[in-house]
Image 1: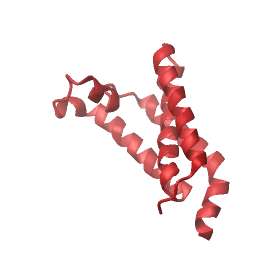
Image 2: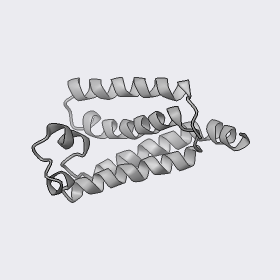
Image 3: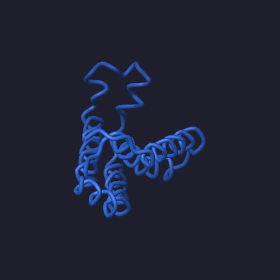
Image 4: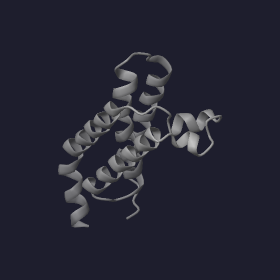
Length: 128
């Protein structure tokens, strides 16, 4: 189950740098909020695929469900319920503003993962 995969690790680093650059330098209404969300699910996916040899579909579904859960936490004000509203890092990681379009961005990101990764990786996992 554990297997270091350089390809995913380097994709993770590239996506992380891209996300940081978007956060620091892009202040618009499309790229930062929606493309950033699309990329973040791919980032989470590639991070876990860097260390886990799990079939693409299972990993993609787990990341999508996690992303939906984070957004649901925002909807219900999880940061406030946990009393973490004064901690900037908690507000950034958990988030404080629910947005329905974020769910679409997460879904689009996972569709990209399934489109570009499934044919190669699931076959490799099944044969081992």
